[in-house]
Length: 255
Image (cartoon, rainbow, N blue to C red; front, side, top):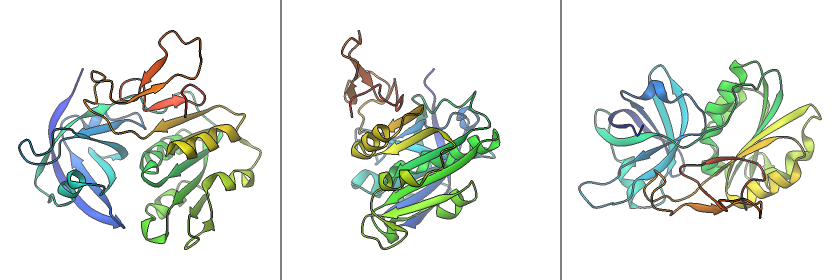
C-alpha cells in the first residue's frame, strides 16, 4: 500500500559542505523499520518541479525519521531552505531495504561513499542491536564533506577515506578492504556504481549493495530507473531500482 503524508519538519540544518540533515515526523514513521528504504519527497512549490526526490532514510528514532541529502540542484536547494514547523509532501517508505532479520553474532563491514553513507547508519544501528560487530569504511571527497563520523564510531571501528587526503586515509574505500579482520562474514555497501563494483569484486562472502539512481515515479510505473540483471538466463532480464531495489544481493545486477 502506497503511503502519502504531509510530514512536519522538526529540524533542517547543514552538517557538512552542501549537505543537510532534515528530521521529520508524521503518521507513518512507525512503518519505517527496514534500513535501506527511501522517502520520495516532493520539492518546489506548485508545478515548479514535477519529479520527486528519492532520499535515503538515515535513521528512525522516537517517531522521528532523519534524512541526509546533498544540494545538487534547484529541488534540493529548495528543500534546504525549509524551516522547522513547515511541512513536506512525502511518499514512503519506498523500496526494499537490507535484509537483516536473521543476521546475528556476525562481524559485518559497512562500506559507503558520499551520499551512500546515510542509509548505512540506520543499518549499523539495527545490526548492533541484534548483537553483531560492525566495522565501517566511509569515503568522502575531502574533509569538508565528512559527516556522521562520531555517530558511526559509536557503533564500532570506523575508517575514513578522502580522495585528496585532507583527512584519514588518502584514496578509495576499496583500498582499505585488505585491512579488515578475517572474521568479517558479511558486507553491506551503498554508493556510486564504480565503488559498488570494486567492493563486490573484492569479497567472497555474502553481501548486499544499494544503488543510487535518479527516479521518475518512484513506484515502478515509469521504467526510468531500470538496471540490467547480471544472469543472462534471467527471465525478466532487468530490475527496477525503485521497486525491486534499491538493495540487491551482490552479483544480481550489472554495475
